[in-house]
Image (cartoon, rainbow, N blue to C red; front, side, top):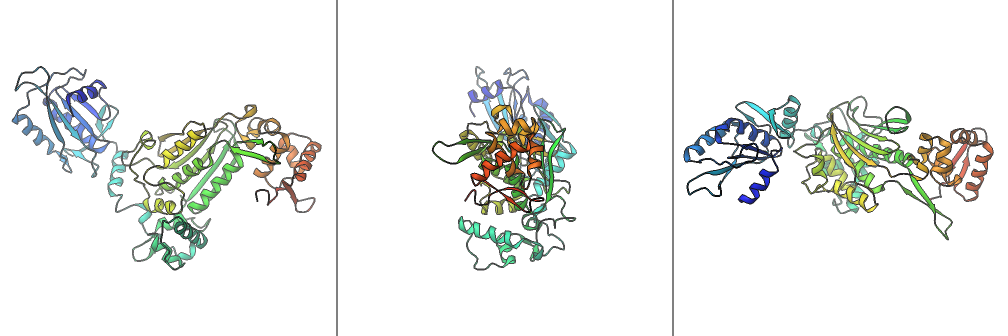
Length: 485
C-alpha cells in the first residue's frame, strides 16, 4: 500500500476494519483490536496517526518491532499480522514513520488475546459476547461436525420418499450434474449423493431432503414450513395461516402453491387472442431462487426453527432460522463473494436438482431478475436468529396490493370487481385460489349478489375456463384441468 492509498483510508475515519493509534505505546489496546478483526472481517491498525486523522508519525526502531512481536505472542491460536512501514512525507532520513499492521480474518476463530476473545462492533472493540463466541466456535468446527452430517438415529430408507429420490437423480443426470449410476436402488442413490454416514446410516441431511410428509414428527420438528397472509401491512390479522411438516422439496412446493394462491397477479387481454395473460407481481424465478436459498442455508439444528413465508399488502417476507456465517453480511451477499453454504450436503442436492445457483451467485441472480422486471432488488436483514429477505410488491391497479387475496384486505368486493381485473377474470383467479366454492360462497366472499356471480360463472364456463364438480348440493367450481394444456 502506498502513502496516497493510506491517506484515503485514514480520511474515511475509524471503522469496522480500521483503527488509528498515535503510537505503539498503545500496543496492548491495538492487539485487542487486531484480535477482534481476526474474529471478524480482518482490518488494520495504523500507528502514528491521531484519532482525529492527523498524521503525527513516530520513531520505529528495532526495539519497537521487538516489543510488538512480543505483544503478538498473546494471540491464541497464534496469529502473524503483516507490518508495513511508510516514511512520513517531509521527515528527514531516519525520521518519523507510519506503521501499518494488517490482520486477515482467521480460519481458526475464535481467537483470544491474553485469554480474552474480542469482537469489533462498528468502530469499537469490546469483549466478545457469549453468543458470538459460540457462533464462531460452531463455524470453526463446521468442516467436520455439523447437524446435517450427524446420523439420523433409528431412521431407515423405508421412511424416505422414494419418488423424490428418483426425481432428484433423473434431474441431476439430465442436467449433467451426476453420472448415471446404472441402478435405481435407494441406498445407492443416497450413497452417490453423499447422504450416508458412519457405515451406511442415513444422515440427518437425507431426512431433511427426502423424508415422507408428516413423518418428521416427533424426531425433527424443525422440518417445518409456516405460511401466512396478513391483512394490511402489520401482523395483526390473518387472512390465511397454514403450517406443514415434510421434506424440503415438498415444503418448497407448498410454499410455491401458497404464493400462487395469494401473490398479486396483473392480467390483460391480448389483442387478437382469446386469452388473458397473467403476470405475477414478482418474477417467478427470483422468488423460487429465494425460497430454495431459505431451505438450503437455514439453521436446522434448532428444534424450533423453520422456514416462514409472510405476505402483506405491500411486501413478501421469506424468513429462515439462523444467522449469516463466515463473516458474510447482507450487503456482501449482493456482490461477488465466495460460496460457503452452512449446509453443503443439502446445498449440493439442491444444486444437482437445478434449484439453486452455485459459486455464491444466488442473490446476484435474484437482484438481476428483479432489475429485468423493472423492480427494486429485495432487501435482507439479520435479527434475533433469523434472516429475512423482503420483496417490495409493486402497486396494483385500483390501489389494491393483494391480488386475488388483496380484495380481502381492502374489502373483497373492491378487490374482485376492480382490483385485479374485469369481473369474470378476477372471479377466475379467486376460484383458482379457493377451488370447490359454490355460488353462495362466492357471493358471500366477494360481496356480490348470487345473480351477478351466476352471470360471471356462465361467462367463464362458456370460455371453457371452469367446471362444476360433484353433486348439485355439495359440489363446487374448479379451474378446468386442460385450461393450461
